[in-house]
Length: 346
Picture 1 (cartoon, rainbow, N blue to C red):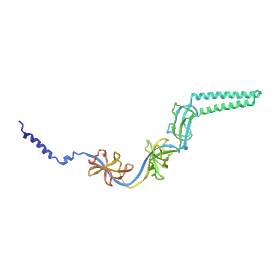
Picture 2 (picture 1 turned 135 degrees about the horizontal axis):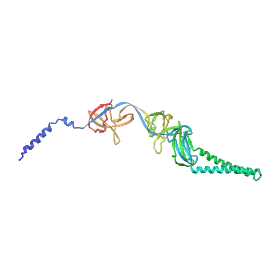
Picture 3 (picture 1 turned 180 degrees about the vertical axis):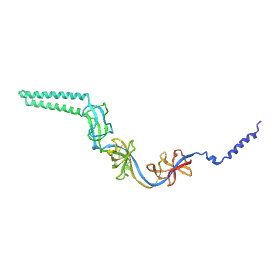
Picture 4 (picture 1 turned 120 degrees about the horizontal axis):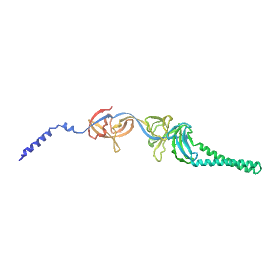
């Protein structure tokens, strides 16, 4: 029979061992996050706003080329966005079967009218017809000749060329397509007549200083260029609910009509404002917050953020100058978590 005293001894020994563990051993089991920190600093802050828009043509600098007759689109030599020189071929057309038949018919009618007019003149010389008959034949001849010449001219105008140097804004037909007379085939924006329109919140539009410039970057480009603002239209668009900022696009920018653009405008300068690295900023359902590091403990702090400038963002409340905030490893942090600082960014 097993003695109860023998069972009690191992249990007692286990309790003795657990009691010998130090507080440091227990603390080592707590999670520790490796982070980087940066101080809250003060200084002057450039308040900038980002605008989104597109390049478009001024009304006076826009050319529209149409199909002179029913025609087939043979080739589009200058797609949308192509920069072209004056006289450069944009689109090649060819007469449709119906248009070719019209020209054949007009030529036959003109030949018949020529013969009729010549016959009327001979008969008048013989005294067999009156002057009125000759005049009628002459008028019919002129009408038929004019119809033939018009069709011949339109047949000869089936190669559409740029009336001025500029950028192709619209191509209204594709190769192989049958187009009716008068159909718009190409819209061309004259060089030097390209502008950009940016949508902007009406409240911000009223804050843009006179004489301001816009720093513009085209879609897919890393090169920015700066141009002065032409005008700010505070009238709100009923669809987008935005006001408008207009600028002139320089030819050397390489921007084409219809191209998407991003702009940055300086609204003002905030003196003595607090800033932190943008990387420190987190969001919880619309509430911005950061982790302030106090004695190697991460403490969540809700803040009110202001405008962003480059890789820093201004803070209007919630922090004090000199406090340290986590800037790297922040997504792994929780309120009250212990941290190990890898490096400090000044």
